[in-house]
Length: 118
Image (tube, rainbow, N blue to C red; front, top):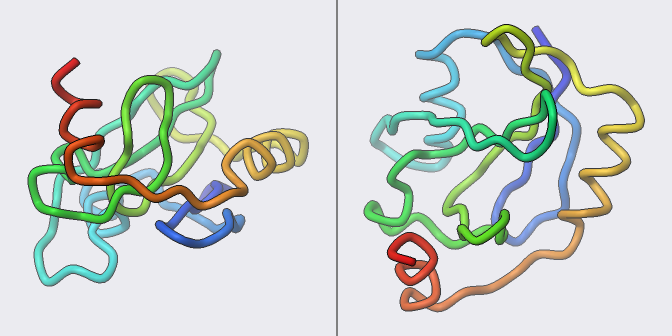
């Protein structure tokens, strides 16, 4: 298990534990859904990534936070990554990314779709 930061729509980030297993991560990005979605990773910084639902915008998951030019839909997790494997965030990482994504955001469907098309 690794320490990650869980970011849900409309909520503040909270530390959590994740298992470095693809099937487990698919279930983690599918919270509050009767379907299991596919997890994907988006590089945020050196050795830092967001694990999120690859096609959340197509499944009408709620818009969560803007990450770069993309609006991530549904729950996502921030983790360290090294050699293709998940690693625990440091205490400084938890503070940094908690502050960065502390404020919940609201988006229209058009804003969400535009972030994926541009």
